[in-house]
Image (cartoon, rainbow, N blue to C red; front, side, top):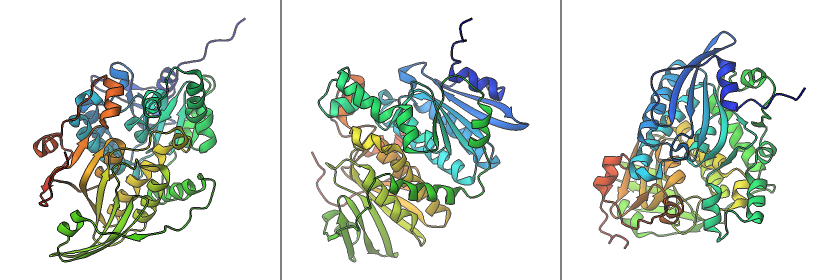
Length: 416
């Protein structure tokens, strides 16, 4: 007698939690409720129905509402994610929707709501960020998780995504086995066996969520496989900072990480930034940023951003780049819970996961006149949609899409 075929992950999860859908689906997202060992459980499914399961405005609104309920109730939440990330075809509206969604997710995670993530075939970009709000992740046999999908990484490196050598390298970087090796919080599932033991562990109560995330931050440093050297800071002067702080400032920079203090009519404020528009955000700079954000004190912290995107390299994905990007977000959100609220100012280019990571925990986002905020860099959009848009959106477009709340005019000619 032949063995039964492996049970699909979605069906196994629905059966384990006795899930029932709540209302109609919103695009690729469905909300459900069920129970596990006598306790009520909420769930959300993001499935590959259209556009690779991407998350647009309607999906973001439905998921954000669920996160807010879980934050209030501190109720267990299971996420099933089979998604390529933000719905690029919706442009800025999708980016603004994801900003609100990820903010709600941060609030739920730091409020102590137990979150578990079960992953389908694809978990890229924003979907991978949602997955890393969870304490535990369960991988399907064919799951691929990364900040960028293989096609985008291949295009950025001048390779063919169908080339056997590239596919082998991508497999080595993104496979469930590789992710399990990177962190004990990642576990592969072979389609057989009882999900109850994993769910019991993944949905365990979280007595101190901030401390748990801080432990995760400390563990991320060890993943580099070498001690991180102390930064070789260099004092810097910037025209934009001179106009933002007419009463003076001190700033220093190390490999695109900016920090310092500035003086305004309201007094002195600390600032921290990710700058260097041609220097994509890699894991080490993200970790160093988060390390300083975790230590932030005082009533406010100004964040500056001029970085178009995260790094699209397989060596960064081997480290699980998403986890470092999310670490920046959690550090800022945890600081806000301590009374140190972040305000983001976009000085130049911004987009994708880097923008979301810094904008979601910020109480307000200000774009400097001429700033370029995009859902993804034009090259990545061209890879995904087959078309390229180089036009610079107006501030009214930013405000309507909820990617920026205010505009700051510094008297500097905008970039062309």
